[in-house]
Image (cartoon, rainbow, N blue to C red; front, side, top):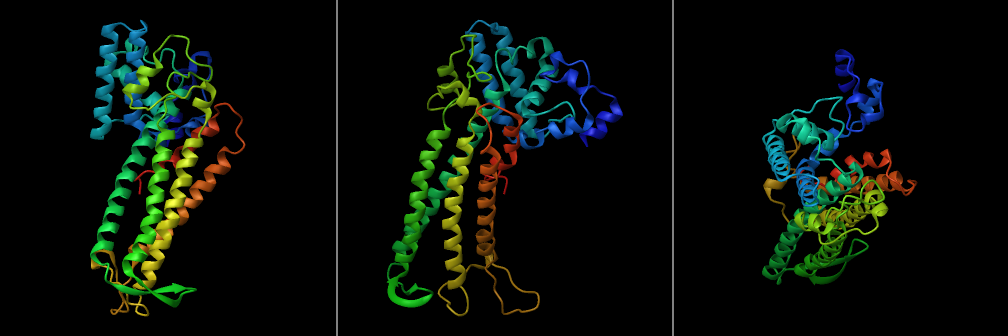
Length: 352
């Protein structure tokens, strides 16, 4: 789509990009489309706006922006975010390479390029995308944390209410010893409680700020990294600037954690699927979470649990794919890192 529009307009995108100062010729239209990440990283629009406001404030305190310039930039960025939220932001194919260039392009249209162009002073997209990723992933993981806490509360409450129910305990799928139903439930409750502990450890490592690390060797404009980190809700700083901008370990660790969670979810689902069959008949799944058969009316299928079990495989595949993507990267930022969009979005509770 982007390449067709560029061919039709005769545009020379290389000259118009955020990085195009030294370029005199245009990019091949196929390269423009191939290079775009906007359709993945637009998910970071809120985080990108918040990071830019914090950056502009730091530049104002460092004497790089005047008070009026900062005020205009802050106001303009908030209007850009309003457009994203309202669904009226228009992505321009071939121009909006990524979420950073899209937001800055629109900011310049709202407040003028002379002031809007000062936003990026002293900042690299390397630190910008690392900041966006960490903010976005932190928020997603906190949402998952809330769901997991609720799930554990329900599990504990049901175990207490149904403590007198007795069921067979199985080894090798054969009846072995009588146990309480609540004992089975809390065996998974213990696994999910461990997942919750691990998740909080992951969040703590994700919630560190790379902003101010520059392209790889730091910032020479005297911006206050601590103030920016505090404004964005980070718990601390990543002190090595090269590691701050180039590492994607935090994404992989989150996906490894997700694989562990989905392992437990898959096993939990499998048990309930088995216990709900006519051969076992220990449980009845609510109609709201079941389907039937168009040919066999006596059937009640546990599709919700079967789909959950199946989605575990996707989590494992995404985690393995990310490992293969980053395993051979040298300790520098490169474009391979920008292919992580689909992987990090797989962690989203809203992308399901």
